[in-house]
Image 1 (tube, rainbow, N blue to C red):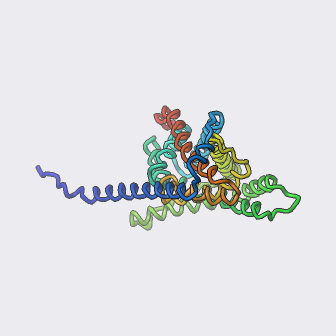
Image 2 (image 1 turned 90 degrees about the horizontal axis):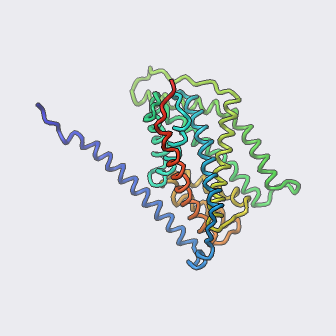
Image 3 (image 1 turned 90 degrees about the vertical axis):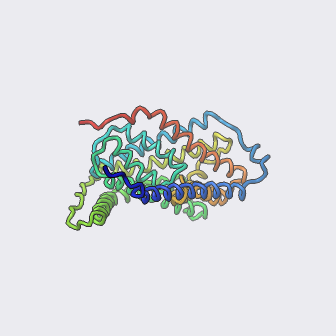
Amino acid sequence: MTEPDPSADAPERRGHGRAIAKGVAQLALGVALFAGIIHWVAPSWDQIEDRIHLSVPWLMVSVLGSAFANLVTAARWKLLSEMMGGSHLPYGIYFHYLALTRVIGQVLPTVLVDVIGRGAALKAAGNQARLGQLIAPVVLERLLDLLLPLVLLGWALVVHLQRLPPWLSAWSSLAILVFVFVAATIPLLDPLVRLALWAYGWLRRLRTRDRALPLPQAPGVTVQLSGRIVALGVLRFSGILVQYWGAGAGFGVLLPGLVVVMAAPLAQLAGLVGITPGGLGMQEGGWVAALEQLGQDSASIVVFMAATRLMMSVNFGILSLLSWPWRRARPSA
């Protein structure tokens, strides 16, 4: 009987080793960035300590914001996944694995966990689609989640520079902007879905070296379905804002609601860069740049940054634990 050749697994082991080393390096970079930003912004420890006042009710507001964001994002993920060819799975599977990947994404590379990890989770839960076909909806989600903060960042700059007409308040302009954003994005979803599936099909052709491999058939995205998906994205961002607001207030930094809405887009965009796990250090840089421009003091900024980072892990850790039984749900016949 031929003995197995240990050297045959050497390339795979080296690949795993490089992936682990890269993940550790990214985490170390995130920690270094976070510590550097705190050191750069922070006043004396006495000022920070005086600023911290724990409030359990506000911390619960933060948990509810995270729960709401996870609730609607899981619903959007399910809609997009099934629309783009995935098997029908119980909603609880999407809710649980979304919360779980949010926790894991705080220490592992964001793209690996959020994109590949969520697709692999659906495969493990019984989805019969190919892994690449399950990844495509998540990539589309990330694109959709990029659009709204970009638009809101432009709005925040206009408001901050006082370029609004005298008869239009900041909140009124925000309501009008969100309405226009939804109306303009709904027609874009159908071509975006077609583009995502086309890209997935061509990647399969390149990987298999078979140019005759048929491309996946794009579904017809109705206006009603597109409207639901876009609206869920807006509601997701609203939940995230409540999560941030409650986290800061829970540690004694109750920022005005308008300040949170104006600062969050830059923090979200910085966090989406994906260089570090969970945008660690990157998102905090966005918070500092935005909150300093909006006139917040250093102690408040430091406490707010630390509170939002801590509560993100705590909130989604709670949600993933509470939804743990849903992981055993199986596809319906």
